[in-house]
Image (cartoon, rainbow, N blue to C red):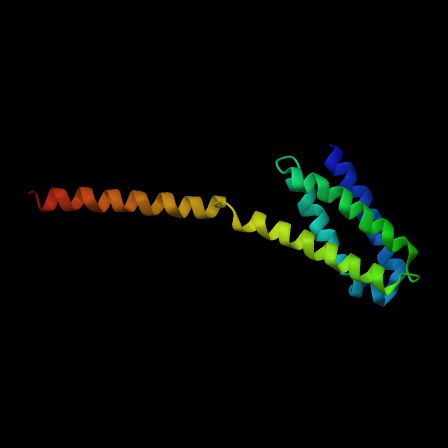
Length: 125
Protein backbone atom coordinates (compact mmCIF):
# COMPACT_ATOMS: atom_id res chain seq x y z
CA UNK A 1 0.00 0.00 0.00
CA UNK A 2 2.87 2.37 0.81
CA UNK A 3 4.38 1.72 -2.61
CA UNK A 4 1.09 2.58 -4.28
CA UNK A 5 0.80 5.82 -2.30
CA UNK A 6 4.38 6.71 -3.18
CA UNK A 7 3.77 5.97 -6.85
CA UNK A 8 0.55 7.99 -7.09
CA UNK A 9 2.03 11.03 -5.34
CA UNK A 10 5.18 10.87 -7.49
CA UNK A 11 3.05 10.42 -10.61
CA UNK A 12 1.12 13.59 -9.74
CA UNK A 13 4.33 15.54 -9.19
CA UNK A 14 5.78 14.37 -12.51
CA UNK A 15 2.56 15.26 -14.33
CA UNK A 16 2.63 18.74 -12.76
CA UNK A 17 6.25 19.16 -13.84
CA UNK A 18 5.39 18.13 -17.40
CA UNK A 19 2.73 20.82 -17.57
CA UNK A 20 5.05 23.40 -16.05
CA UNK A 21 7.95 22.56 -18.39
CA UNK A 22 5.98 22.44 -21.60
CA UNK A 23 8.11 21.07 -24.43
CA UNK A 24 11.25 21.05 -22.26
CA UNK A 25 10.00 18.06 -20.27
CA UNK A 26 11.48 15.65 -22.83
CA UNK A 27 14.99 16.92 -22.03
CA UNK A 28 14.49 15.59 -18.49
CA UNK A 29 13.01 12.27 -19.68
CA UNK A 30 9.91 12.68 -17.53
CA UNK A 31 7.96 10.04 -19.48
CA UNK A 32 10.75 7.54 -18.85
CA UNK A 33 10.99 8.63 -15.21
CA UNK A 34 7.28 7.98 -14.78
CA UNK A 35 7.62 4.47 -16.24
CA UNK A 36 10.65 3.83 -14.04
CA UNK A 37 8.69 5.04 -11.02
CA UNK A 38 5.96 2.51 -11.75
CA UNK A 39 8.49 -0.29 -12.24
CA UNK A 40 10.42 0.55 -9.06
CA UNK A 41 7.15 0.67 -7.13
CA UNK A 42 6.21 -2.82 -8.34
CA UNK A 43 9.65 -4.28 -7.54
CA UNK A 44 10.35 -2.64 -4.19
CA UNK A 45 8.75 -5.40 -2.09
CA UNK A 46 11.40 -7.89 -3.16
CA UNK A 47 14.37 -5.60 -3.78
CA UNK A 48 16.13 -3.43 -1.20
CA UNK A 49 17.81 -1.41 -3.94
CA UNK A 50 14.43 -0.54 -5.42
CA UNK A 51 13.29 0.70 -2.03
CA UNK A 52 16.34 2.97 -1.97
CA UNK A 53 15.59 4.04 -5.54
CA UNK A 54 12.19 5.29 -4.38
CA UNK A 55 14.00 7.84 -2.21
CA UNK A 56 16.33 8.68 -5.07
CA UNK A 57 13.44 9.24 -7.48
CA UNK A 58 11.68 11.41 -4.91
CA UNK A 59 14.82 13.54 -4.61
CA UNK A 60 15.12 13.77 -8.39
CA UNK A 61 11.54 14.95 -8.77
CA UNK A 62 12.02 17.47 -5.94
CA UNK A 63 15.18 18.77 -7.62
CA UNK A 64 13.16 19.60 -10.74
CA UNK A 65 10.84 21.89 -8.80
CA UNK A 66 13.52 24.58 -9.23
CA UNK A 67 13.17 24.37 -13.02
CA UNK A 68 14.10 26.43 -15.07
CA UNK A 69 16.71 27.64 -12.56
CA UNK A 70 18.69 24.41 -12.68
CA UNK A 71 22.45 24.69 -13.11
CA UNK A 72 24.41 22.66 -15.62
CA UNK A 73 25.94 20.71 -12.73
CA UNK A 74 22.49 19.84 -11.34
CA UNK A 75 21.33 18.79 -14.81
CA UNK A 76 24.41 16.59 -15.19
CA UNK A 77 23.85 14.95 -11.77
CA UNK A 78 20.18 14.42 -12.64
CA UNK A 79 21.09 12.57 -15.83
CA UNK A 80 23.72 10.47 -14.04
CA UNK A 81 21.12 9.39 -11.48
CA UNK A 82 18.67 8.52 -14.26
CA UNK A 83 21.37 6.31 -15.79
CA UNK A 84 21.94 4.64 -12.43
CA UNK A 85 18.22 3.87 -12.10
CA UNK A 86 18.11 2.58 -15.66
CA UNK A 87 21.08 0.26 -15.04
CA UNK A 88 19.43 -1.20 -11.96
CA UNK A 89 16.16 -1.82 -13.79
CA UNK A 90 18.10 -3.51 -16.61
CA UNK A 91 19.51 -5.94 -14.06
CA UNK A 92 15.97 -6.90 -13.10
CA UNK A 93 15.16 -7.64 -16.73
CA UNK A 94 18.25 -9.78 -17.24
CA UNK A 95 17.95 -11.90 -14.09
CA UNK A 96 15.81 -14.98 -13.88
CA UNK A 97 13.32 -16.41 -16.29
CA UNK A 98 10.02 -14.79 -16.98
CA UNK A 99 6.84 -16.82 -16.83
CA UNK A 100 6.71 -17.19 -20.63
CA UNK A 101 10.29 -18.41 -20.83
CA UNK A 102 9.63 -20.92 -18.07
CA UNK A 103 6.62 -22.31 -19.96
CA UNK A 104 8.68 -22.72 -23.12
CA UNK A 105 11.38 -24.62 -21.24
CA UNK A 106 8.80 -26.92 -19.62
CA UNK A 107 7.17 -27.55 -23.02
CA UNK A 108 10.53 -28.46 -24.59
CA UNK A 109 11.33 -30.87 -21.76
CA UNK A 110 7.91 -32.56 -22.06
CA UNK A 111 8.25 -32.89 -25.84
CA UNK A 112 11.73 -34.39 -25.41
CA UNK A 113 10.38 -36.94 -22.91
CA UNK A 114 7.56 -37.88 -25.28
CA UNK A 115 9.97 -38.28 -28.22
CA UNK A 116 12.27 -40.50 -26.14
CA UNK A 117 9.31 -42.64 -24.96
CA UNK A 118 8.01 -43.04 -28.52
CA UNK A 119 11.49 -43.81 -29.81
CA UNK A 120 12.01 -46.50 -27.16
CA UNK A 121 8.59 -48.01 -27.95
CA UNK A 122 9.17 -48.11 -31.72
CA UNK A 123 12.80 -49.16 -31.54
CA UNK A 124 13.34 -51.33 -28.45
CA UNK A 125 16.94 -52.19 -27.59
